Length: 269
Ligand SMILES: C[S@@+](CC[C@H](N)C(=O)[O-])C[C@H]1O[C@@H](n2cnc3c(N)ncnc32)[C@H](O)[C@@H]1O
Image (cartoon, rainbow, N blue to C red; front, side, top):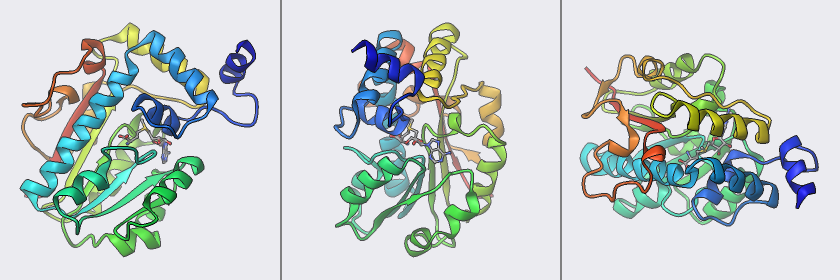
């Protein structure tokens, strides 16, 4: 056990923990390795991070439902999608309208391999392996072009991905926004230390250390900048747990609920 923990902390061995698989573990999925589970358990001991993952997943489900039911959107580009475990975008969207198409994007090869297996019988959903910051590559990918017609309203989902984008995140969001026509939606969540600086700070340091990759919480003001030029749907940029949460059970943890902002913006006049 100690050797394994050391391996997790140093990133040694053949496999490092990765957020796609940690997130899968937090959500009760089985597509993760021992190194992921160890870091996940260590992080759970520091912060209600599994509750945070469920809060984010629940926000994502509300947004997808809203897009299909109220805005008639039938195309989704889900950036930093991870492993499409239960309740993911294609399941929610296609359960309302089976003609919905979904393109997932993730850079983790193992998440992509799992996703390909899970989606192999679904002609209207695919995963693209790419860095989300390479906007041109994502938009030009043959699967993106096959499944998404950007002259039609499209939802771009940036759920839990922007803390991993360290180089000009506002520019990356703006380039996706520029690809969207009127009537499209851009939705995001973002990790923040605004409300719980010490607890979230400890979580971030621990995860970044374990994964050997940066994780950047941002302030409300930073996130507002990402939403520039979009017409924010009510209630605007708020904690994701509070975004149109009527009828959903409140989160089990106040700290988890206070760790993530969420917002949904409409492209249009
Ligand atoms: C917190 S998880 C979010 C998962 C998913 N959006 C959800 O709501 O369940 C972040 C995901 O982003 C992926 N990721 C991180 N940096 C990335 C990058 N630069 N390009 C593509 N994917 C990235 C990770 O592999 C991971 O699957």
